[in-house]
Length: 249
Ligand code: UDP
Image: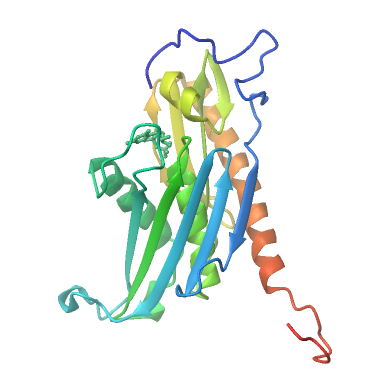
């Protein structure tokens, strides 16, 4: 949040720099089962973001002393590739990626049925290949798909989306310039079945009314993302031949 931009983020017709309306999502594409070696995987393109998620487990806990006899240990690693941003990002974890990993893990712990797999570990890795703001939302959306692809029992498929404020207006799904020069950014994630908010963060300032509007927008955005997640999973796992006949796939 860099305060008011010298370059206007909205044109005279109220359109955003990429031509979007205030309440419009960026184009989103999803795919599951993209990695052979992982138990589950997903690829998400969300505007200028490109994200890949891989899930391994439930598997042996390492180091062993972390094992929990009552439930599986969930690990989540969010990592930005050095080439994912304009300036090279220094490889390895930093404060930001550790924070994002923590809150994303906590969001998934609300839905993954960890109690089914005591003394095991479920590893979730997310790599940001290309970043254009909203990467934590794209990452969590991809991670949730990858967990479903791995066949790990979940109460729900977590979906995320951000809303915020640019040039005095509440908008959905900020891109990089809007995130950098806008007034507020509020990423959230929901468990769509229950409506529970499983991740909530906010950066910048909004009035109470703006905040209420942004929250409504972000939840609606996450619900749209969840529809695409469900379609993606259905497409992958649809049974094409119920008769069990000449299906060569
Ligand atoms: N960003 C960057 N270098 C960094 C961290 C972030 O260029 O070390 C960019 C990147 O495009 C990212 C955006 O700033 O998507 C917004 O970052 P933020 O911390 O708000 O997280 P995000 O919106 O991606 O979840």
